[in-house]
Amino acid sequence: MLFNRMEFAGSLGDLGTLLPITLGMVLVNGMSAVGTFFTIGLFYIIAGLYFRVPIAVQPMKAIGAYAIGTAMTAQQVSGATLLVSLFLFIIGITGTISWIGRMIPKAVIRGVQLSTGILLMNQGLMLTLGLSKAQQTAGLHEPFFTVQQIGMVPIWTGIGITGLLLTLLLLNNKKLPAAIAVVGFGILCGILLGDHDSFSTFSPGFFTPELFPVGLPASTDLTIALFVLVLPQIPMTVGNAAVAGTDLSREYFGDEAERVTYRSMTLSMAFGSALGFLLGSIPLCHGAGGLAAHYRFGARTGGSNLIIGTMFILMAIFFGSHTISLLQLLPFSILGVLLLFSGAQLGLTVLDMMNRQHMFVILVMLTITLTINLAAAFLCGLVLAALLRSPRFQI
Image (cartoon, rainbow, N blue to C red; front, top):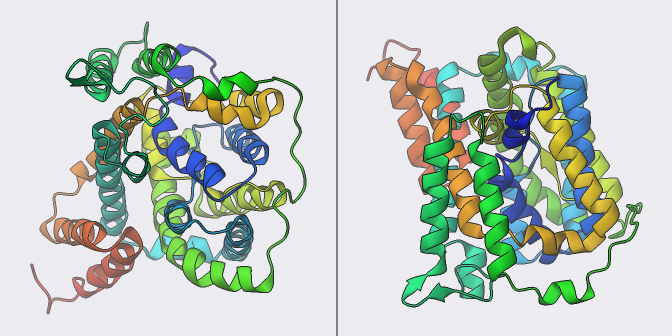
């Protein structure tokens, strides 16, 4: 494992995906801040030690987006975390996920990757332009900043354009990696322009995660969680995290990713979500988009996981719920820039798909993703790929 500036830069690459949903679920749904950040950090470290290559740790997006949008209770989110953990454990321990992975055509995997990449780029652009749900709800481009514009120029314009230019200029620079420069610039902006009211009660200490800090879900919570949160999430987790994430890791790291298999990735996510259920955290998974982000900004070994994981654990232990205030120093527009480039990196995986029928499957999946959602696109892609194997159906 390596612990150099490139690994450090790569470890920061996925903050654009990780932070908005995580902060939203802590603030809106009442998940434990200490438990969430401690679980994220520990999950990063364990994944890095076992897999030995960069592995993303991300919120489960379908669960997170719906839970935040409808302000579901912490017990309902906790119930979803438990149920999805049990599902992943069953398909992992029985080897079902390995059979599923072998049955999924490569065109469908690429369709998932392109669709996810476009979604990330879209979300990145919305964060940069101030059009995300959190920004629109607050009515501000940078909800945690006291300064919203300088003269007639919105503050996001200067921050976003500067972040974009820094990334383009330093993307392949090993002396000053892009992610370090961009995140550092964002933190500086947060210090100079941010709303520091939350720091008036800031008091570092020693905080430890508690068992079941949000309580146990009731039977009604489990029922709601199953139908509203878990079922829409499962196709995304299987298609994007377990299968597409595994294939992308092998493509990036070759033999070094020998421990990354459909089964090990699935069981790892089962463990991460089970840990989250115990500590009141959000449901967590590994994602192809997050891996693309880590890789694009310089991560090449499991050392990047240990770096970012240690940072989250230290913040959870020494700052507790005040970790939220620290993370809010990062402007939304900077998180958007990170998402734009990580999404582009993931979307470019389709370059090896030159077959006409394969591209048709990929483009149909992208269209369905943008119209409905990724879960529906994944299922439709499987059906379409199966139909196109027949000589009766030609494109």
